[in-house]
Length: 313
Image (cartoon, rainbow, N blue to C red; front, side, top):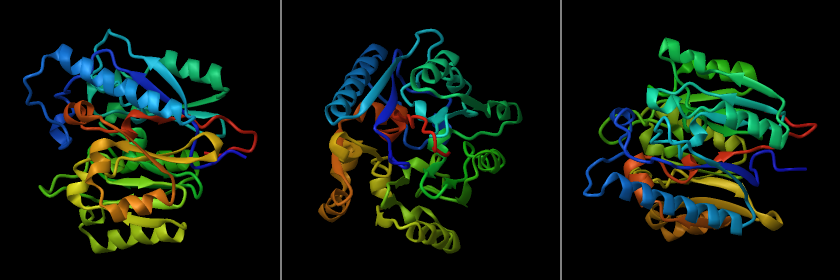
């Protein structure tokens, strides 16, 4: 029986024109634009970081389905496919409404069709019509999914609308745990997955970003009641993408915890020791992607949960 929470198969998009996206910067405090690098140099550095992560995952037994980004139209954030698509063990593919118009170009029917043909997905749900109402839900950036207990964790922001989240829950049968989270400047955390990672038996979480004590207790209680050990990170560690990890199932049933080198370097020895109880730590330098794109390792990986006869959302 395949692991219902983690997968050994992922999709990644090789970038064609990675760069700073001015449309996403106003609500993504992790992005930066100041540089002496040319656009070509940024793309070359990002591509090298991308290839290195793909190689590391492949060496550890992860099946990586690499999709080529198309040059036209330019898509500066195509390297982050988890925001527009999710796959599910019951054979479903869901596509999502994106806040930035530039990012909506990342949704590609040819990719959806290829996934359906290659892996046997046989149903498709589209939520992108919510863009007409300026309501957004950016996939597993907005939502951190507990696939074992069918719970979705989501911090509300301009990119994570409660109405669309309710639609997702009605469609999938998930229960929602909704909360507010802000950075030290008081700006809403743009994506839940930069402050929270959920593994089979653990959760990495920046609790200090949740100002409301009742909401903090709500999130903590759900995690503990689902059997997770909470590994708390600080706001400073979150800013280095220490919350943007992903657990995957490698070869020989090894559990892997994937993160950037910057994220790993920010962890204390105690935190690293705690994490290694749940998997082998895999890190890759993603400085260019993190600096200009405002996303990290988890954002680059769209999990493929291949269909099972008894699979669920």
